[in-house]
Image 1 (tube, rainbow, N blue to C red):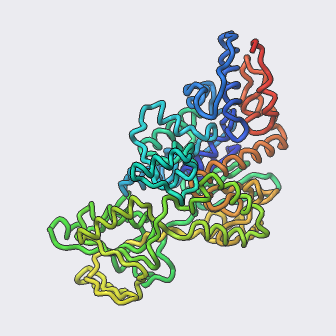
Image 2: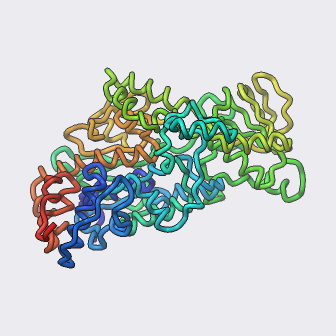
Image 3: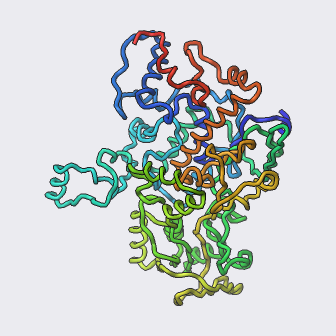
Length: 553
């Protein structure tokens, strides 16, 4: 196949959680956004009954438990990826979640920060929790303490007080929500993502390819992508790439311009001599191996900075000096709890009802509130401080830096002034600033069509599209002005995928020849009265399938 002339229906740029959420949603027959759990059960029961000619009634459904796990989680093995011609391009690797998995491995992160209902599966909100129970891996979950309990009954409160445990009056979540507020292990989450890939037959979609430029022909309606593996073309492009910018040092730091001369890096930047993240430079490794004292500075107050600190000490660094420009904030989630609690829809309604994108950008900044660490890592850092292997300095910034080439170390000055030893290496764990206008790949589109940005994020349509004439979609962190403060996390990935799938279905319905493509590609199974792929993309009425059955109910 001539890849330069071949035209894909859809190219997804990015094989992380947001890209996986989009690809899975485009293949989902009964997305949870359209179907309740009861409707899920009836649909899958009808399919099973039609094929086996059973006439028994389905069991009554509750919110969680009565649908058989193999039907709800594993899906239908007849689903294939042949309906639409889709490619997924990822600069990091040719597997789903490769950059995510590498980060967790390099920083030795055992558990996710997010609760159980944050995941990329479009079918079932409780899918991850169900997967854990089905696989018998409940012991790999960690409870998120202090966020559940406000809904305790009077009897439960009295019992807690009598036993010496006082209920958490500051929490926002009812006791019945407790199963949701556990954190999955990385191993469990990785297995669940692999299960999603297998269920929707997505494993062969990902290509290792770095996209450097995206342009659009307004006459033909075709996108042209310049990539590290050649030219690729598509009718629809979906950007699912986080901040879409390489990690760099803050522009106002005293190390800018000295990266080549001295030993300083960003936590997420790979060293040229190493294919992995967060590898110590050779001169530091030699000192560690020789048993000589080493000092490393970590700049940042977020969870990544705490993880980098713990990892460096695990690698043998004698002492880490962690500098935080403000107070060290402690939160369970990267958002304020109301945004992930039972009243989050109230806050989202306020967000969507804002008068302008500037107001929404202010709400995002307020909800996220800068970097923060979890109570778990606060305890870890305090233990390291007690052991004298960590110096943790709040309200401290670096004001000057001089590299001593002969000694291979930094002399740094701080505000307020601290007595700092010679520093062997400096790691910035300050995140990546989103700035859509500086993303290299979209420069041709910015020149041709232009788009307003606020707070570094593009002002997309409500369907997360560039505009009504340019079918380039953006999901993840850069879609924050439409998805809200959670856009950059796993919950935002699923919400973004839902909006994009609806609009993609609408576009496919409008374009010439798409009906035949859908008919040939998705295919109607002989025993079905409705094309469920069209149903999942919103091209047919979802209520129709629930009322159709040739078997006696």
